[in-house]
Structures are given as structure tokens and as C-alpha cells.
Length: 241
Image 1 (cartoon, rainbow, N blue to C red):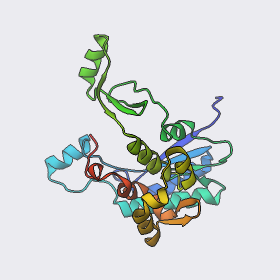
Image 2: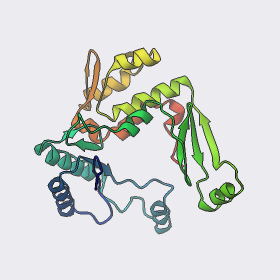
Image 3: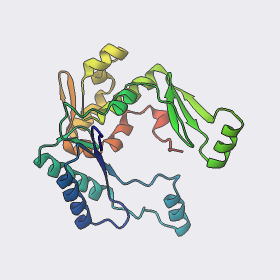
Image 4: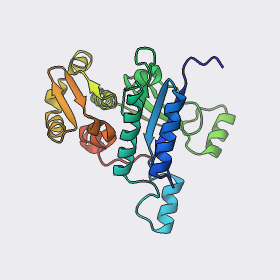
């Protein structure tokens, strides 16, 4: 059809998923040999319909696989793709050829590039300011029809917040160079985050070199959980809305 690259998404731990079904899905994806595969671990954020139904039913856990199972399934997928020559390039991606397959959108956004929010509930990032459009469809349509901006909230980040944002996002790639942050932000991450990085190294989640922080496979599979340790104190208890 003329597409330069083809990506397949896999989601580990969806409702009613089993290990047998997961292995079959991975085998099919490997057989198809796409240029890249994005692998997510199923989550149920607290502002979703599934979560609200859980509250109604009095349930305390989501009807999806637990985290240990999801991590094991993603690790299995990683190993199966690596066997056929793929490379793990982040906590969520394997690619057939790292030299030709580039995630320009992801890498640019994680380094602070602007992103224009278009559509209901869309998030954006312009000049260091985080934005979100109207989150409900009716107010969004009414605002657009009046010819007004659909943006209904914004948060102006500080230089320190932008530094932390870029540091934790790029950790999801599995490897970062401290010299990069020293040059761009004037921050020595090995000193600034010495307690967090030391803990990660002691737990087997990361290794530290002269100019490299590298996550182990175990660290990569649960990087989103580990990143909370690097948040500013007043952000650690915040919930996504």
C-alpha cells in the first residue's frame, strides 16, 4: 500500500486475556514481521468507565491481569521478538532495524517539542505550557461552534519541572547520558538523583556508569512505577484527571 513502516500494537493483560491467548498473539505478530511493535501493559485509570463500574460493584481490583503477570507477558514478547532479530528500544517498543525505524514524534515530544492539541480532551504542550481541551464532547462542540478556543485548562511549567519531565521521559528509553542534561539544563543528574539512582541500582533495576544510566530488563518492565521516585514531592500524590 506504500506505507514506509508498519507498526503493530499489543496490549498485555486485557480483560479475559490468558497466557495461551497472549502467546498466540505474540506468535502471530512475530510471524507478520512488522517494522516495529508497541507493547503496552493494560491499565485502568481511575477516571475511566471501567473504574467507575468497579466502584459501583464494590470491587477494589480491576478485571485485568495483575502487574506481575503483565510484566512477565511483556518480557516474554520481548524475548520472542529478540530471537528473530528485533531490538528492544524502549519500555514499550521493539523494532526490526533501529537504524531506519525512528519514533520522531515521541523523541521530539519528550525533548520538549510543541504539540498542538486538536480534538476533545486532547493534551498539548506549547512553549513549556501544558494544555488540555474540553474533556467532554458537548462543551467541546459548543465552544468550537462559537468560534472560541477549546482549551479549558493549562499549566505553566518551571525550568526545574521541564528538566525533571525530560529526564524521566527519556528514562523510558532504557538508557540516558548524564552529560546530556548537564549540557542542556546545567544539572548533574547523578548528584541530583543520587538517592533514587542508588536505590534502583541496589534493587537491580539500573546500572550506573561514568556517563550512562541504563535500566535492566526488570527495571524497564516497571519503569512507570519507578519514575515516581523522581517527581517533585507535591506531584507524587497527584492523580491523572
